[in-house]
Image 1 (cartoon, rainbow, N blue to C red):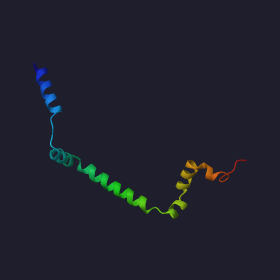
Image 2: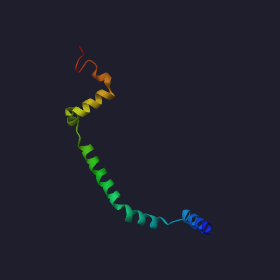
Image 3: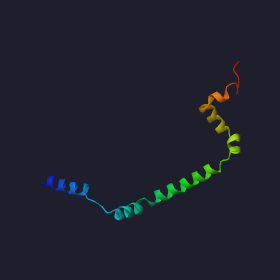
Image 4: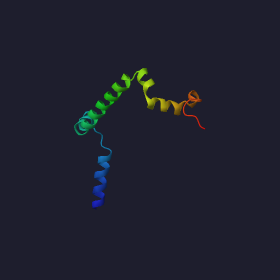
Length: 83
């Protein structure tokens, strides 16, 4: 008999419709630190990315390494030769 009660409670909870306003309020109340953190990091990464100039790229050893890996045909004959 207890199995029947548990089944009824679980199935009623699983398919209950919740108004969007209540859902949004719940999400905001419980997950606002994550949402604020994602917004701050997204803004920071975007600001830094936009601030990178062509001069910065030309002077970057990391950018040169990635270019050598992604476009090896542009760098043939350059670099450290083999003996």
